[in-house]
Length: 287
Picture (cartoon, rainbow, N blue to C red):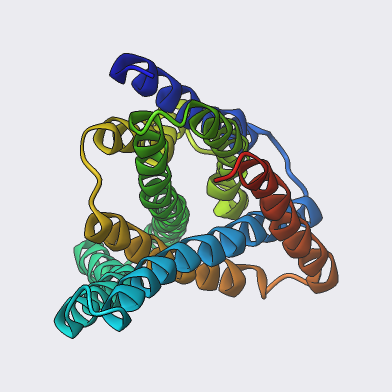
């Protein structure tokens, strides 16, 4: 399989993320459906978390086996584990800290409430409500883009696997990886827009989210075709795992205020099982 063919198929695998994104533009989603979509996306993300952490651990276990056989030093194993730790912490606490600082800056920039006549007070209250609504919308869109970023890290590592398989001449494996990852990416679009709640994103925002989430599959396929780096792959798995764990926590915190806990848990299980089902396609192909 040539480099051009690999890049094309990597792009196809990544672009399917746009299949689920238009759901975010649907008008008047009721509360139950909103909770269901959010928890369904959390289930998909929970599977991706399991998948990426499993791959990261496998990389370290392989190196540990080499150390046990005397083919590498303990410093190599420790270095990979440190890389995993740094990436994971950056993906969880790092994102949380960055978001907190961003929120603090937004609140500091908000104009103070002005006093005065009743008419001015009413106008001020309306302006404050408008600012709060705008802030809530910005928070929701930022959470959705964080999900897209986490999924993009995961998809970059998947793209590396496509490129490595294609370069090695394992065309059947590469083809099955592309089919499996395309199915995965189609469900990941729901994962991005599900937690937005009542916020209706613009087409421009959806286009950017799809590019952030699906584009790395294409980039990873091109890079994996030319060079394979275990530490690089581990770093992206670690960052993705940490970011996904953070986002799942945010989704759960957001839906707790609703009264559809049982429905949400059913959809959480459904999203997780769908992730496993699509992954079986990859396993069937030997991935």
